[in-house]
Length: 387
Image (cartoon, rainbow, N blue to C red):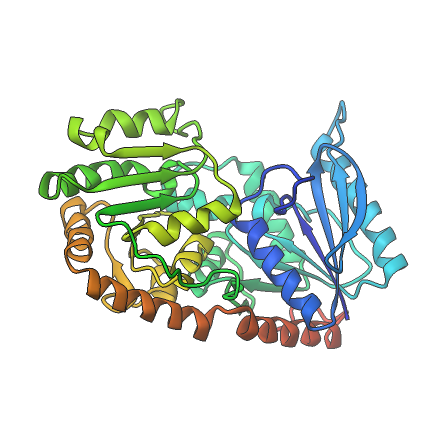
């Protein structure tokens, strides 16, 4: 079997910046290679055209083209031509694309196409209660309706997406996976009173609520420090730095206890996770967050949001706590409880890793994906046949 992935991002030194979507595709691609399945990755919107092979995966980086008229359509048709050429040449049996921006709208491929729901623009706009550009909605709906099969990383994302686009077709649920051998429990003892947030510094990840929550925490435990790690972005509503808004929200004491790092390497982030006493991830908008899985795999107790997908990942009171990020006092109380009860936090961390091993490890999830792909190959030329 030969699977192709079309993606706007992938964690590679030659690629443009990548986030959770790229990481999830990398994990899946690597696990498929280990099962002797061929994998090709097509990364569009890049700075240059590149073709190479690495770790058994064939890569094709596709440069972003500029057009004077109808660029959105003409670039899609260019991608279609490049992809179909490689599909025929390399005998790719299935092409997979993400739902984000409906990149496959108006494209036709010479092999079955499945779309994996990591969260459309419409999905995130709905969760954030903001307006979406109508053309983006149309692109995403067209792509989803024309795909041969749909798969989602969480049941919540599947149902919400079906509701938004009025889709009446089945969606397979296969979660993101993580290589638990890469994210191991640390032998180091966590640093007392250290909180860690890692991920993009953006409103939808709950960081502005975290500022108010942290004020509550330091009011009760002035020795608590918050390490904030991630790229700062312009806030979608205030049109200025999210980090700047975050800092302005902090009390004087909380400001003294904040340490911010804009970017760290993949290996460094694991060190920071290991050193944290509690991980705080109060996101409002996710599909199934890789950051949660990474922290859980390293036996860390989390305090997360309690929205939608959270129940598919966390077990409240066992792997940590889930709470409404807008309930600042209650969220702070959960953090303080774990800081004040390190043995309980340790026990929850162990339960968190067991949850990942059982539901999200590559060994478990890769088999679900292989079965899905086999169904799609059998059902080729029969749209909407996957259940």
